[in-house]
Amino acid sequence: MTGGRRQPAWDTDGARRALLRRRRRRRIRLVLAWGLLAGLAMGVAGGVTLGGSAILGWVRTHTDLLHVRAVNVGETCWVPPWEIANSTGVNPGDDILAVSPGEVKARVERHPRVLRATVRRTWQRKIEVQVEENPPLALWMGHAPLEVAADGTVLGSPPASGRADWPAPPEGSWRPRGVELPLLTGVRQKEADAGDRLQDPAARQALAFLTRLRAYGQGGESWISEIWAGSAGNLVVVTLEGGIRVKVGDGRLSRRKLEALQTVLARVRQDAAPVEFVDARFRHQVIVRTG
Image (cartoon, rainbow, N blue to C red; front, side):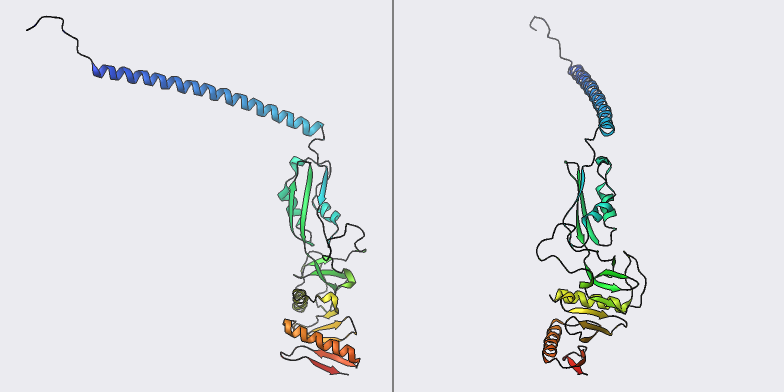
């Protein structure tokens, strides 16, 4: 046995416990530090929010920096733009932050002449409104002359004047108004207000017939003076030129049948012979009944 000092053995378990204690203390200090920073940040944010709210409230109350400057309506063909502007319920000077585009859209779309609307606020403090209109198809001669759309919606009285009151639309988008539209007569339903819909079956057939003509590129306003809808399935058209009565049944004429009808009408007008009526109800022929 050799002499010399004995080396102490290392306590590995104690060293591990000491290391874990140091790590726990470090994590606690980090958590406390981040918690303090978060508290300070929240305090600063709250102060900024309160201060910002106070400043915003003062600006809204004491200045016109957030007031609506104008309500602008895009180009329209069938309804004066000031009617759309009035229907928004927004006026210059209103608080623009209190204007809800969704609520304005809903109000505008309640106008019978509007199918759909788009509303947005701009940084120039303006309310911009674009509408897709519900165009008139016929002039219903009920208790008063009222324009009617393809879906039967009663649009109201035709404008007293033409297009002089607002900017002209793009070339080709204009349609005749008022008495220049085909007259819808004989309808059994007598009363309806703007925004209501015609429910009379014969009237709905007449409107479907006029819609079909537009789809064929032969709108009724170009050759029809009147369409009588006193009985479903027995529609009678009166032409603009010559006042010729044409029986069209329920109005479901094919494009080819309509072309044949136009050819017959041209010959009748050329011959200038007295005609009682033209019958287009048959599938393969158009009959002329002379008077």
